[in-house]
Amino acid sequence: MTAERRQDPAVRSAVRQGVSVAVATGLYGISFGALSVVAGVSVAQTMALSLLLFSGGSQFALIGVVAAGGSPLAAVATSTLLGVRNMLYGAVVAPLLDLGGWRRLAAAQVTIDESTAVAVGQREPAAVRAGFWATGIGVFVLWNAFTLAGALAGDALGDPRAWGLDAAAGAAFLALVWPRLAARRAQVVAGIAVVVSLALVPVTPAGIPVLGAAAAAIVVGLVARPRLPEGAA
Image (tube, rainbow, N blue to C red):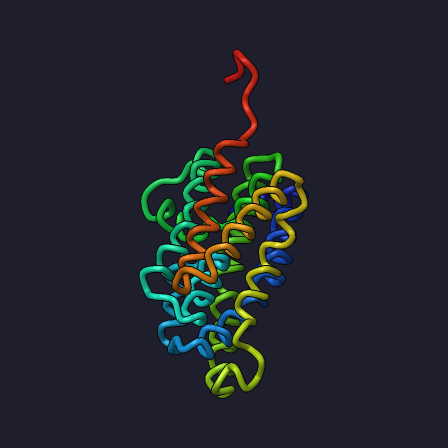
């Protein structure tokens, strides 16, 4: 980034937004690291999830299924369903960033909810890029650093049931998605998903209710999506 761009007020504002979002989001890594280890995932596996998967919602969903005794297949399927949204984010930010080669690969790794939100919230192209990278790299570094801290702490806790942590993964995931339920449409979709999940809990193995809820949410979201007016692009 050139000196002129660094001095641009819009760029400075975007970077400040990115750093503040990175700090707030990165702190969640402590919860993930601790809950992952007490759910039976090793420290090395926990770090691999944060470094390679790098998607908070998907990571919490995966360890939630594992903690509930679900099969590895159900855990991976649940995590994958939640991670599909990152592909949509990529389609949004790719034309804004206009990158190629290794930079495109690096951008794909840090294309998450937060980096996308900060990027699309800017008006100037330079601010878009600055906000995206400041947020994406900041979250990646802090999320993994705090994941390691939480994993090491969780490894020392032992049995999660002795500390009342056996249900904490679900609570942490709820805290992560709660801010996204402000819109009425999102509330309706979430409500239907909850009903489907509760109906499946008594009759299916662990992990299947989460998959059923996710599938129901996808179907409802597709059916109820807003329709463009005739002639709209």
